[in-house]
Length: 365
Image 1: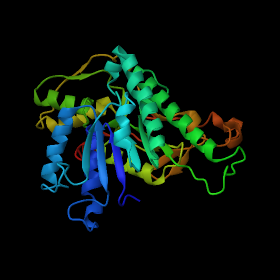
Image 2: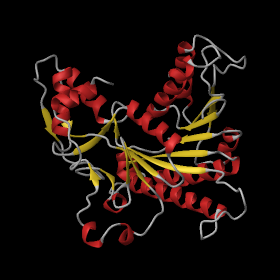
Image 3: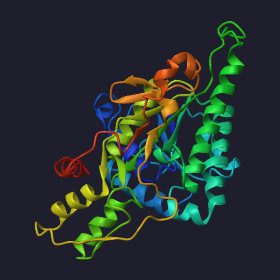
């Protein structure tokens, strides 16, 4: 599926984009390629507005790829594009000839979005609309839109903007289907197929990514400072970057137009997380103390990966859950008297890690 294809990653210099590029370039795909040191992909394009991160990523990949170049200064199959998804024109050049898009560009810092909610609107909602419209115009085969568990029952400005981002993606997916089929589901013209598919995935907390609590707690432990925790009873879904990449690639290979795909990620309480980190990084002393500071604006006690309404039509597909955009109404899909017994999928009622399980997961970072 990926042979000789062009992939674009928006926000590609972030933690997820970096991990995805590493997987695409340095996986088993390379070993099976007949091109020395270059994956079967024709090209990976990185779109971001941070030139410093682009430069760092460029030299990091240059070292990893041992100087293999295509003669234009772009090493192996990587090309960098300077641009902002808020500006639709900057997407045009980056999308020429692209087969698949991973849309990771977003404003994700909860406190920042609380202070500047319109910036969250411009990046997460309008920016996503720009990206989807441009991808459809360019004939992209599939777009994987990256969302967050905070989009379910959103409380923060970031979560609300991501929830609206999902609505934009699903509405666009439905409109694409309507252009290809009549109301009876019959193709409008014989042989006409969906030109672009749009699939959404939701991440939990990406462990170790920039701006998350784990690097902060580790720095505090190593400096001998108190761990500043908003609420020890808070629970969060935990995903390694590897799991996030697995989910993204699974959605690329298996996601259908309009789907939301989530991973059955484990959850942990902040009390368990801090204990695991202290045991791993506290030199065995366990002397670090925890200071409870109270919740920040927009924070929730627990996160939801799929709502009750979504779970009534969800499909269990092994390590993942597929939530279709369309289907029979809930009352037809599930007997009315059993709807109330269906729970949402949240970090309080999901599989919870203990200290040893959390330590094992942390060691994967």
